[in-house]
Amino acid sequence: SGQFGQPIGQLANASGQLQSGVASAGRIFELLRADEQRPEPADPVRLGRVRGRIEFRDVSFRYVPERRLIENLSLVVEPGSTVAVVGPTGAGKSTLGNLLMRFYDVDGGRILLDGTDITEMTREDLRSCTGMVPQDAWVFAGTIADNIAYGREGATREDVVDAARATGLDPFIRTLPGGYDTILDEDASGISAGERQLITLARAFLADPVLLLLDEATSLVDTRTEQLVQRGMAALRAGRTTFVIAHRLSTIRHADAIVVMRDGRIAEQGGHDELIRSGGAYANLVRSQNPHPAGRSAMAGSAASA
Ligand code: ATP
Image (cartoon, rainbow, N blue to C red; front, top):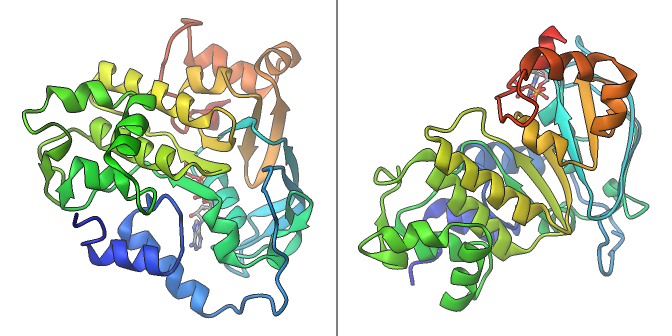
């Protein structure tokens, strides 16, 4: 019922892009335009069941010729594991996701998915196994159920409720007089930013992607919703290869690996305990930003001072 009523919905769906359809609308237009200028491989490799092992091998990249950004970056992410990417503004965190999704192509090195160079696959195949949850979650005019159902074509009400339960959105929906049939306008003016993000988490859960790109919000209004979003993200990450641009220590601590980026390079990588022991940038960051070990203090852009 009106599930793909929005032009952006039609566009994203018709193009087979961004399976979970959660990238911001303006961004999708921009990226699709860039895609039109680059041909697909003549004889693309089709992966069967995607396991979700990602390898960046000696990757270099610059957006503009004058300024190198990523240089000789190597990183392996095992299937089902979570990598928290941290670092100051401009370090290149989002760029890793842009390269992985082939919104831009690397200038040197390779990115492999299950051992296959992603340039040998079609972009559609690559993106159809990926869910993206950006900070600026978008909703379209329609019911809450429609907004969640957008994650998977043909989703039933039961699927929608399951996804909402799994991501912690269901109790909130039940507090609304209209429940799942509550109508949202395009700005979702009746709900908070955190609740909007919960909707996109449920949408991504329904899409059930093998790979996840999460951009953790730097600030959400109230603590309770923030906790719900944290839990929703944790539920979504389980069993999927996840890159999370992380701003909260609790997210970072629970990641399988932490990548500290600075100036397009990996300054440090390892597990939380390991990095604390080694006493480098990450350890300083945690010490300076988080006097309370169990706290959830925001770490937005904070590695700048590390
Ligand atoms: P933030 O925490 O602010 O999101 P980030 O670590 O994710 O930062 P990126 O978004 O990856 O950083 O950007 C890295 C650098 O590349 C920045 O200096 C940014 O201005 C530049 N950059 C990003 N996108 C483009 C683009 N499309 N064209 C040119 N330069 C870009």
